[in-house]
Length: 346
View 1 (tube, rainbow, N blue to C red):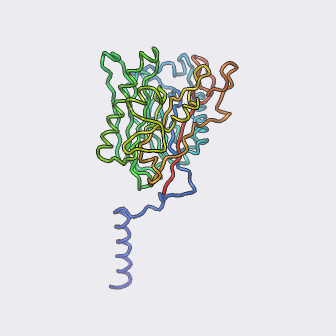
View 2 (cartoon, rainbow, N blue to C red):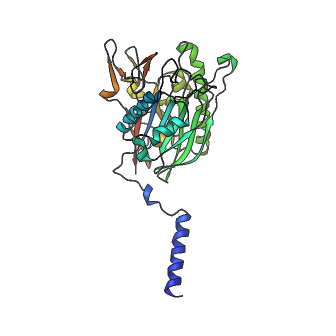
């Protein structure tokens, strides 16, 4: 074999090796990078177009809220400022978005464009037209499968009621760690806590059923549940139905733990209702992500809050500076604060 033939076969061998799953240097763990998983209720990120199948008329230029292109673009820039403040999480659960188009605008027309975010979104039957989604940096997370979990409400709980689908995504983090992610936005407390609670318990049961199926195949599965549950860590839907307890020193296998529960006990929260902080936005993980022996750990649960995100209410103190308060346009960020956890690799 002459040198030319030897070189040819060497190049073919390298190509075959790479195509069969050779190492991808671009996704090696960079210990100088701060990998994060976050969640953000972005408060009604609507486009300016009227969807005749949804109750979105207010969010149009001629609607009650006078939602126009300038306000829409300001909203995108404001959300990007918050997400940039979190150092652009590797994975970011989102809720209260109208459709995939608004997320594409957010990913392409702001600072997020530098981080090449992918989107997992499904159109839900919510009558207002708001959905959940997962945004992820393609360089660090590869989606293997995804689906939407539809919740049908029986007449004895809420006849004719519809809500947001639960988004489920399975993927590989840094080409190594399999991660199961659920993004949620549970039914609101409209009508009162007690009257509305059965709706949230029903949704929580759907999440719990999906988690149990994963645990049945792999008791050490890495599971992350993100969302605005419209309930707090000690409410029945979260603590009993989902069975997500407080993170303790003694971590039990095949269990769920609420990373935000300790902060809730300290009277911290993500949503301020008349001066009272409520921990409505959650990051819940499986026990394997909390064990010191695990190759990947969730650490440092954080409510992201900066002074520039807040409005100093003369009666209730500092509250999240929202986009709208009723029909009044304030031009703020969101009525919720985002949350995140950091990832540590071994």
